[in-house]
Image (cartoon, rainbow, N blue to C red):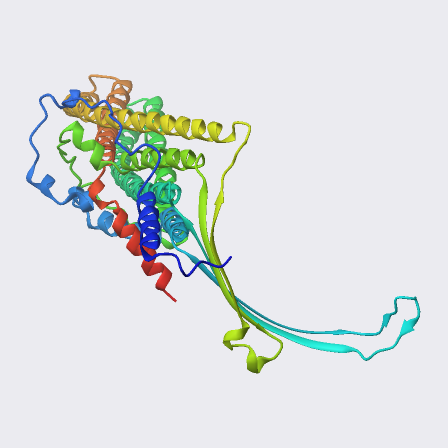
Length: 497
C-alpha cells in the first residue's frame, strides 16, 4: 500500500521512537548462573605434600611434568592429526555458523526480481457463435522489482535465539577443549603404561637370565650326582615360564603402541616407539581449591553454557505469545518496451507493516514454554551432576595417590626382603642345606613382589595423569570465546570468499 507523504514529521519520529522502544523489550528470564554445591576444601588434601619445583611448569603443556621428550612430541601431534579432535572442531564451526544464521534475522531481507515475457492472442469466437477472424495480438512485458522485508524483533525472540546459539557455541568450544584434554590424558596414560611394559620386559628378561644361570648350576649339580633330576625339571619350568611371560608382554605393549598411533592420527603401521628404561618419576600436583574446579574443567564450563542456552530458549518460547510485526516495502518498474522501462511513469511501489497474531493454538505455546522450562531444569541438574562428578574424580585420584604412595613404600621393603631371601636360600641350596623347592619358592616370591611394585608404580603414574585431567589440565574458562569473539568470527566468516 502507499504511504501518506503528508504525514507530519513529528508523527514519523514518534513512530520510529516507539519502534525503537519496543525493540529494546526482551521477554523471558535473564540468565543467572545456577549454584552448585562446592566444598571449602578437598577431603583428600589433608597432609598433602608441597609441590616440587618441577610442578611449577606451565600446565598448558601439563604432560611436561613427566620430563619425557618422546611423550612431549606425541602430545603435540594430537592437535595436528587426531580425528576426534577434528570432528569436535568441525562441530564448533557449525555452532558458530548457526549463530550467523540466526543473527541474520535481526536485519532486513532484500530481494530483486526481474522478468521478461512475450505473449500473443490468436483468433476468437463472436458473440453469436460465428467465427470472427482477426489478426493475432502480440505484446511484451518487462518488469524489475526490488522488495524488502524486516521482521521487527520487538519481543526479543531473535535476540534470545542468538543468545541461546552463542551459549551453545561456547558449549561446543568447551566440548572441543574436553575432547583435546581427554585425548591428551589418554595418550599420556597409554604412554606411561607402555613404559611400564618396557620396564616389566626388562625385569622379566633379567629374571630369565638369572633363572638360566640357576638352571645351569642345577644341571651341573645333577651331572655330578649332587642334585636330583626333579631339581633340573623344576629349574627348567621356572626358566621357560618366565620366558613365556616376557614374550607375552609384547602383546600389551603392541596394543598400547597402536592406540597411541591412532590418537596421533596415524595408522599403527606408521608409528614405532623404541623401548627405553622407565625414568619417569611420579609428579606431585597441587590440586588447588575446589571452587576453582568450576573454571578449570571444560566439561563443567560446557554444561554451564548449555544451561544459559536453555534459559534463553524460555524467552524464545514466551515471545510466541506476542504478535509478529514485519515491515515490507517494494518498488518496481513495469513496461511493454525496454526503452521506457526505467521511466518514472513505469514505477509501482508499496510499503506497509504486517501484524500476525495467533488467536488459538489449543495450548501449543503453553506446552512449548513448559518444555523450555523443563529443559532448563534438566540442564541445571546435569550441570550440578557434572560438578559433583568432577569433585569425585579429583578426590578419587588424590586418595589413590596418597594410598598408593604408602603401599609403594611397603612394597619396596617387601621387594628388598624377597631379594635377600632369594639369595640366602640359593646359597643354602648350593651348600646342600635346603631342597631346590625352597629356591623355586624364593625366586617366585621375589619376582612376584617386583612385579607388584611395578604395578603399583604404574597405578601411581596413571593416577597422576588422571588427576591432572580431573583438574582440567592447563585449561580455564577464560579460554572460552566471548560473545563478541564469536560474533566477530561470524562476521569474518561471512566476508570470506
